[in-house]
Image (tube, rainbow, N blue to C red):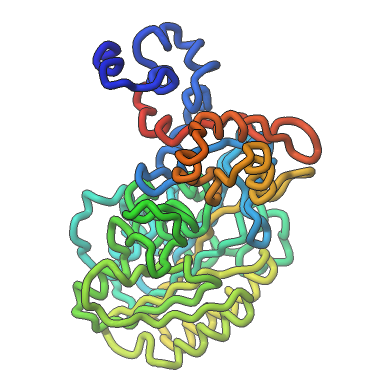
Length: 430
């Protein structure tokens, strides 16, 4: 194998990453010296499930102690980091079609939500083999709802619910409304809302659906925003896509979100020729609740054809709790004894002291390289401008080394590990 790779001209650092030949003769050497392979196995697995070979950033980086954050979002979303526990998110089912005596096991992943809703609806989705998620056993009661309201909080974690005990009456009493857990698992990293919402919407992980973050590469190699005009479609269909296609476009499908990148909850462009879904965008939780009221008044749940209304709910725990209370009451009022409510979250990591934001890293690296080598960032990585590298005679490994040297304002290295994306592609050799 080593000889064959040498003939093909594979660079030495790739042989080292691949752990072939003598580069990984000792296990302990691999765990200390090899980029990506040196990370703890659970962290590696989460990065791998959040990675797509043709769409993810060219260079990936793991922060130290919550030290690197995105420039947008309230609170700012964090890059994957070492030394932090896996994020906990709520998962709850309530209402029509839900077996109240059932339970949701701890560490249930978010890719289980779409198949569980499908089972509640009685929907037989095609091609289950392309999705990692499986229905949570025992949740579906056999009664069919006329409306499912799927609410995913983009700024609230289970730790936030615990920390605001007494101030979040709806979230604090989820288990009294139906099967629930505060120990749900997003299943992948980075915790980019665009990626995790698509996991919730499809029932597959980012390595399957390919929406790895708010920014990704399209089939032409351009860095684009997810769900925008030039963005690649999800590799697999969402539950809403399959619902619309299976029932000949009769269901009402809607989304209330804070940004177009929240469309991963419903998709809408996987099948050719389907009708347009209702989409309303607002980034304030209270106004989002009013938008839900408006859509419910348009006939959601009016007949026996099951409808799906998804909400990517913004705001902190207290604001989200108030909006949730209003949304659930409105759904139950609009569709008495016929509405299923699902509540979950995407997970988000709080910002540590003295942290850096990715825009600062871009400016610093471009200045020290003497060229605009970084095209842009996504949570957990950077997109390298290959045209600039070719023009300036710069190797991608030079960019990796420069990013690795970056220090946060509070002092100390920002990153525990920085590596080219091919390290993840070759992770089977770790």
